[in-house]
Image (cartoon, rainbow, N blue to C red; front, side, top):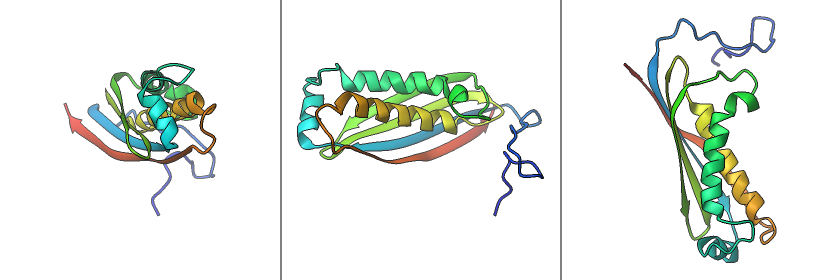
Length: 150
């Protein structure tokens, strides 16, 4: 098993020191899904959910969440994010959320991409809960992460 970088030799949580790591362009992509009833999907498509435009609000919530990641997750580094993108696709079974986070820094943007995806999905859940009590958020995961020398 790999050594856990967030734990010291005594098992106590610590923030990872990234000061010796090179500054690189870092990109992280995450995906998630929310399963909805067909009637709910139709309401979202037709923009008939009473709380408003579900897809636009969810995209904005994801972007805002990515920017707030270090305030939500203990020991997460503050990143100077250069780009956040949240794309949402309606399927026959529900809604897929794809998030991309980019930065130039000494640590990756995985948590920002995952947080964007998670909060976009939670926003969809919140906006649709009055009409769908069978929603399931599932399959939130990191698709890829890259780092490139600059």
